[in-house]
Length: 253
Image (tube, rainbow, N blue to C red; front, top):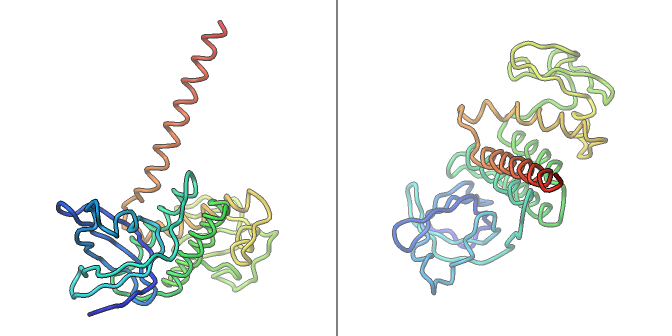
């Protein structure tokens, strides 16, 4: 197979042998693909510094089997993300890597990921932008959460209503239920996910919990590395802040 300049997003990259990279990427026309970028780590390679995770590129490749050989690269957009935006980008790419199959085209997933990375680069709040990406990803893969009506009765979801969600029974009316993996979620969060706008922080919090609950069964019991990294960073910052406060208190004495 030979492909010429397909819009593609780099999901993951690791060193291979002495001078090359192994790359996981998501092509708009071809879905998730594995590539060998031969010689890309050489100091004089024109691909050096271009094949970065999160980069939006046009890639050409050839070959057959599990790994194709990269033959050409053209830059579309390199997303200069930092802080929470960078971690959000890694998280989104890891979700795509974990939830999609090789060589299974999903143009909508490519477009949704590209839109997310562009929004993050333009300063969109990561905690909000990620919820809509998760929604679109689950919908496209057939794992979508019902947002407009309850699963049992078909009753229209109301922003002022209280609901229960679990992966077995779907969405239903309820409040204060504590059974198994059932999750309490506000109607405001459901309507916000559906309409693309949240009314308040509480709705964002509920939407985050809902998306995590919907994604978890499809991860095979293995945690996301990006989430573990973020938790470790947050724990380090909290510990560092505590040490700084302690040192400051000691100075005051």
